[in-house]
Amino acid sequence: MVKRALCVGCNYPSKAFGLAGGVNDAFLIAEHLQEQLDFEPENICVLHDVHPGQRKSVQVEESKRPTRVNILQRLQWLVRSARPGDVSFFSFSGYGLQVDDIDSMPDDGLDEAILPTDFQEGRGTEFSVIVCGEIHDLLAGIPPNSSVTVVMDCDHATSIADVSGTVNGQLVPGLKENAYCGVKGHTQKVELSEHRREVWQEERARQVKARPRFQPVMEVCNPRKGRLPTRPAMSRSTPVAFCYSASGHGQTAMELQVKVDKSSSSGKEEKKQHGVLTWSFVAALRELRYNCTHLELLTTIKKHMAEIKANDLPRMDQEALLTFTTPLSDPSRMKVLQTLPGAKTTSRRPSGQSGSFAPPVVPPPPAGYLTGVAMQKSASAGSLPLHRRPASR
Image 1 (cartoon, one colour):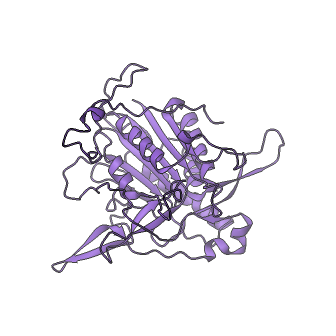
Image 2 (cartoon, helix red, strand yellow):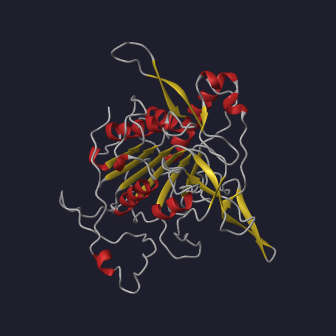
Image 3 (spheres, one colour):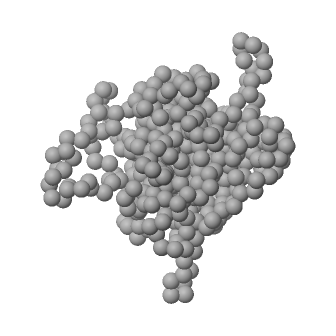
């Protein structure tokens, strides 16, 4: 059994409206995964656009930056490396938003998406986003008898796992409905969401440097970059997946300054910027001694978020949302980041061998593939190498 993790933190240092806690979130989670949950350092990948505690002018290596390409490639590595019995984890801390696909039909609804750090580095006014449907399709390739846990500390990320898999048994709020022949049904798109400015602009929120984690609606031509979405009627296996979203429809995910342990050098209480969900997620795991079910974790997360609201953000409206794939995922019985009950592991390749294999979820073939032009390149393609990084402290 192997545990692997991809932790992504975006502060957007080159933007005037950047964040301050996304990168802190990624390293905080990675540290706890390694020290408390038996994740090996070589199996944890952290993508970040600034170095924690350093100036924005210090450049990060291109392979470590949370660009659209790097995030999707590392997600493919996370899925393709998984074997029955393995445990996978993915977290994103940054901006979420709603996207209006200008190529779609009017009134089709909006897509949920996240912003990579290079979202404004496209040609001209072109924006680069990662639609939540792309993440959903990639993570759907997790093999049977293995699991994936996702933490989305941003707005507009409620459709990663399953919009029908909620604790109360109802659909995720805000879904767009369509009527065909008098019969109503939901889609994977959402209605326009509105945010209340007083959540982050009132005086107590300013004192803790609170910032929202959303961006206004963007109009993007073909946000999936040509990748076809998975149709609901397509036959495919359903993985065991759990997703913790920072906020629901019409709510605002926040980050703020929180008090951390006293510095050993100065003895003074230190403050760091973190997302409300990430800070509550780690605090809840610590309180439950890293041994709990997903339902127990959700309840404890909500308790810590309520404490933040009472002490620092009186008008905070965000509430953690847990979604999971049905019918295999059981939040009341399955434990967080632990091997599934009764799961059988497969034999591992010897260390240092990275043979390629066909992933469960395959992207559309490149141009010329069917005519044989790209056959030679495809046959020689290997698996994605894992970037090794020193353990963060």
